[in-house]
Amino acid sequence: MRTPAPCIRMSAVVGHRGAAAVAPENTLAGLRAAAASGVRWVEVDAQSCADGGLFLMHDDDVSRTTDGRGLVWRMSSTKLRECRVGGAPVPSLSEAMKEARALGLGVNVEIKTPAFAEPERVARTGRAVARLLSEYADGVRVLASGFDQGALAAARAASPDLPLAWNVDAIPGDWRDVVDRLGACAVHCLDAPGNHGVIPAVLASGHGVGVYTVNDLNRARALWAMGVWSVFADDPGALVDKSPDAGVAIPGSRR
Ligand code: G3P
Ligand code: MG
Image (tube, rainbow, N blue to C red):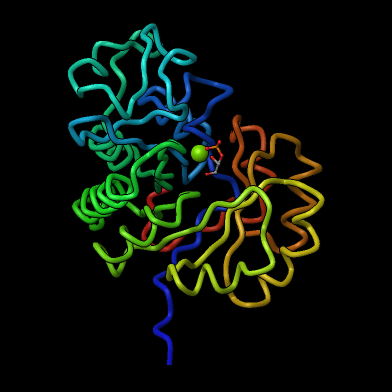
């Protein structure tokens, strides 16, 4: 018999990239803005740079969100720290986890790896994220996710207790095989018509579903009515009071 995948259910609203519409994305300021909005969980994107340092960054290249240029994957930690985002250094994943712990936020760390990445380094990144998250497991509710199955498989091997979610823009026909192989407890997918027909089957199987990116209350309500566990929102404060778990205590949560 298969061992059940470790699982954690995030709040019905999750701050996307911190709170990307309210503060610069993937920053400590974003985590503080999310916490101030009353949301209980945030999602951040984490990448590894050339020396293995883990930092918050969505894009492969730093130029959209910082005053620097270049690929995170090829930069040293020192060079990356010289890039400013919203006037501050690019935060490390450790700094983000410490901030989340202080704020009482749960964190979904999405592991980002570029399409050109070597499989061995992808695996190393997955392991490094899992190990770092295990250091915070006592104080922070965590869920790791990602599009790259190699990164998730490596995270699972490094940390058998870490809850995982598989990110996929369009849920494929073999989703069940993938989540079982990875030991993932949830699927995170785009809010796209092609997914809406499959989401009930994922939920009926006992797996969670998170949907990105949902900034409209009516869309969020439709997804919650479908049974979707979480929506990722750029301005979580606009949805949090209307969400199904508003005012409901989450076990182990200070929020
Ligand atoms: O993890 C959910 C969502 O963040 C995936 O899309 O591109 O915003 O990282 P993206
Ligand atoms: Mg993301």
